[in-house]
Length: 353
Length: 262
Image (cartoon, rainbow over all chains, first blue to last red; front, top):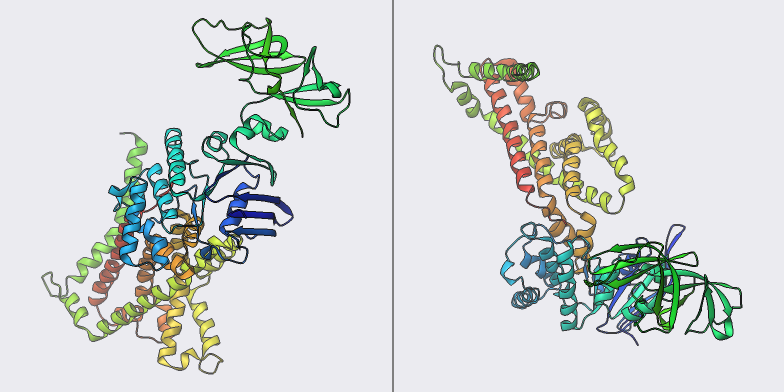
């Protein structure tokens, strides 16, 4: 059995159902991210695991034990909050020692464990500082040490990086991942930042309107989005309207372009309208580029973005963006120019609603 | 200098004169007990008066008890309202503001009707009972200031997240309240305490009508029967208030160091 199991979790606030039949199994030592826009229910699921909210239905099982009847302070779960939530009246040492003192650990053990935790986050020299004397990144690292000190079964991270500036965010997320790997602690990370989720997770749960739209590895989520929502939320994606021509041959028509999809068009008939997704980085206009499929269209605009050049093509009334790497000899395509975009048929994804 | 600036200075000067001149006059008068020379005789007379010591001590004790029991009532209430019953905030605020609207004499007559010696709860039937009633009435009087100062301090910290952070680390309610919340709203608690202290030390109506030997009725008694001592007492009363206000300022300056937020 998995270490953390969420079985048919539902949660309603009054008449509004914010989590709808959520199922998930997380293995021991796994790093899972809940990704989704504001109000999709990701934080509510996290708060239910913590015990701050009670599920309207379903069960939360950690290490084979149902947590539903347990209070927050009985669950042995660690949590890092978006707003740090360090106790302002306590020093860094006392903050980290708090959980251990509550658990009634001997003084020597507390001292040793706090030192170990502070060393882990490389802040052992700031043990006597107060939270207000530290930067946001340092405070969040202390919050992480505080959460880990009592050796929790599960670590919950509620958008811990969103209050930090971009540079610190990147370095701290790598640090969090490294510490998580080192300790092998089962971790649930909530974020609305797809880059964060893609870069540090073993698996990602993309949530939409209280449901898990897709659960998969970062690569699966990015390359094989299961729904139109996942496709549009994770990364930049072109959604092209197409018409099924021959379901048996998997062929669809986009404007004047007839293309054959790799994945089978099950259950559709000729003339049905479908959505096809294509990543901007998948195609190339170079004649030498590898690819078994070609789409031809007219350039709408072209923008120089530093490392890449983003060009918008009109293909059968669909505006499609594609990126090419910048190099000194690349010439910017001009509006009105006709271009052929070459890519692999496997890059075209049939998107279901 | 612009005319508006001159007018502002004139307005300020008028205000300062209006406020300080009577005070300076009182101070000067309190030093003139000895004929033809300034002296501290009035103060000496006041401080050596046994009744002064008794009433001052009694009021100090009442103030201390008011602060302790008032805070034990106000801090958990403000905390609970912020955490679990935010929709009740306007109601609680309205209730705490009532003592500002209802005159003290009305409140004390209400108490006397409710808690007289022939009532169900005869607080006024004994000296200790009356003292308890006096503390309750002082708590009522200081509610607007105590609640507001504590509530403002709670607004400065993220009460909900701090509570959740403590809870997930295994803490129970008493620990959360006394180790995580109380120390972080100490500036508000102390501000409320100093205002309460100043109010209780000078309060007359409640103490006089409940017939307790407090400092307020003593001030009135001396004022009616002596010449120089009332002026000395007025200066002492002002000094107490100013000391409280000074400590309040000091506490709020320290409290600026406390919050840690993103």
